[in-house]
Amino acid sequence: MKKHWNKYAMIYIFLVPILVHFSIFHLFPILFSLYITFTDWPIIGDPKFIGLKNWINFFSDQLAWKAIWNTILFSLYYIVPTMALGLCLALLINTGKRGTGFFKGIYFLPVVTSFVVISGIWAWLFKGTDSGFINSFLGLFGIEPQLFLSDSLQAMMVLAGLSVFKVCGSTMIYYYAGLQSVPDEFYEAARIDGASRWHLFWKITFPLLMPIHFYVAIITTIGSFQIFDSAFLLTSGGPNFSTTTIVYYLYQEGFTSLRLGYASVLAYILFFIVFGISLIQKKALGKEVNYK
Image 1: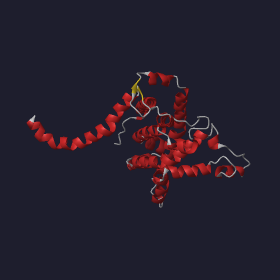
Image 2: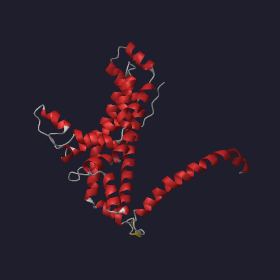
Image 3: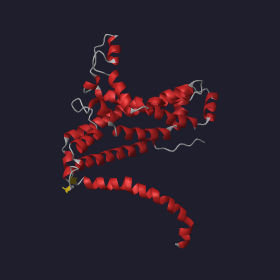
Image 4: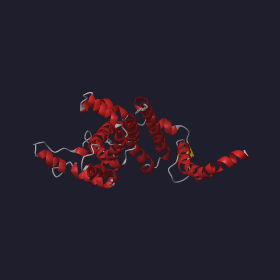
């Protein structure tokens, strides 16, 4: 043991701050929130143990299931467009032509812009009156003004469009890094064989970017199930709960209704859903790629 300690003492010493930080700010909140799921705790006062009541109530809570469905619907509107647009932008800036550095900054600008600012711009663009920018534009073609954020069918698509606009710049960077790692020899050999640009993309670029597809799919999925800002700032979960996502509902239960125990149950349900989807994505996309 003394010999082992002398050999690895410095490693253990450097690990101590990390383990302390992890235990206090990660492990303890996870375990404490699990305990809270079995209690009735309105923040004020001590938690009251109620067993599995919160978990049982979840299965009969129609609004919770609607919030889960709304979140899944948002994910369908958000994940694929974000990945596709990020890949297209990465292909544009990967050409190496003059000015691509400038456009790289322009495309990435929404990522570093405050969500509150972008939400304000989005609210003006999709204002459900004649004075809204999009409705003014549609009026040029004789199309009647749309309600957008006040319409149950349109509101979720507007929120998804906002998130795509906000995040696609970061997915562009991930794909751009992946494109830089693809050897030029593959393209040169394919061009000698007479391959078209479409074949170069579909047979070489797209398959070799599979690790990037997997990573981007995972982070966009997690981000889509954590959506809160746009629903809070633009629609407040409406109209008719059509944009009430699972995180927004969790917030309402925990900090408006002061039902921290039930809110913790929703947090764990969210974890189980994201974990299950991540396993499916790993099975479908998590394949090793050999660049040799």
